[in-house]
Image (cartoon, rainbow, N blue to C red):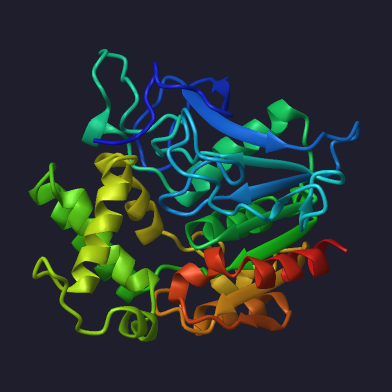
Length: 343
């Protein structure tokens, strides 16, 4: 199954080895390796650092071409660089592969102490665990306070967790196409994907990706692009499209990581142990932008409106036919909001 493993080309990754870590729901990791990438130069006082948080199947390669070690080009290419919204002449941009991922950070495809891969034995992790590891990375880099934390979808969960759990370390928050707590619809969709993987370790990840991709795009876009058209090979065009995306993901992603990370998303609730969502959001002191995509059926606008209302800021709406994936595709609109936030 896909995913970066030791011995593969490193590409633009840098690694940090951290000591033992015990996730909040039990289990123990004798060490954690974090894979991350950076752009720009860190100021002497560490005050110009921006953390970009990737989504479920993303990784540290936010910007840059595909090549050895990086099977795909940067997933938010165009937002980072000289003169870009995350201007590398001004900011030091950091993106780390998440704890439990499969692109260089310790996860199920990493080796356990017994020399075999962790696989499904890897301990359950939460969004709070993932942010704790990112905080250790920030400490190691000499970053006491992020100028901004930016995230969409699963990345938005970690961005919000940062702003709630460590408000003194986040000057600005950009929360995009995500929610403050997992919904029954999201949990139902994601547990169905997990069931596909558990029932068929070989083909299940591809099936899970097909299910997920339908939630990432809008019915309107799929209808406009494919309708009920049948190809010369007898397949529905939309089915061929989903097959293509399934093949792409299975070539670069680990099935056990997919189960682990979707479970972290299922258990996400920023208000847990904090008196509820409203009380948790009241802890945020960062300047904040909250945005959503008008055609998103996986993270509909009412979820971002809850966060915007809790933070006392207007909800910014990105108009797009692409559904949830609009947060990745509509880089011009996303970039304008980033520029407005960062000044």
